[in-house]
Image (cartoon, rainbow, N blue to C red):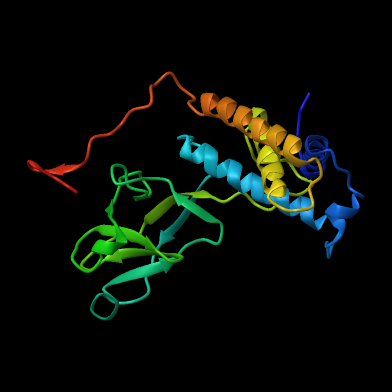
Length: 232
């Protein structure tokens, strides 16, 4: 049996956890549209849940491509680099300073991610994120087939299927209830707050265990080096 498959089922789970209902006066009092508040709680809960799983190391979900990137705005001399706008659903680069998120169509990696604070002293095939843009450093020579792999932010919840690991969907509801708990309308007092906090803790622990999808152990990577010198 499928569980929490769409927005309506998430709403029902939210009502069960918070001991409220869709016609609860305190919940809908300030709504400008039907079920505005509960839908906002659930959407923020979905975003919080996605953040948590990504921070746990779940790196193979919600991946898309932007590109090929064939044209760049700005100029090296005037702007200190060139840039392209990120996709509207951009959430996080699918890469790091070890494995570049930029590549050619055949998979060949290009460039190295850097801290944007170093943008005025670094040249060559380096890149960084700034505002809602992907920047490449002065003197960079990107291929015309350059593709960026990125994780996309979950779309607005709807009547369609929830794009989230099935067993971890209760985490969305738990985080939504936690958001609601921070508002003054939620009934139940300290006992309700404790119940929601326990629910969040339980769901996080279960999701964390499932975030490792192979038998490979989590590892701490050493600092990158050039020659015999460590970066600081």
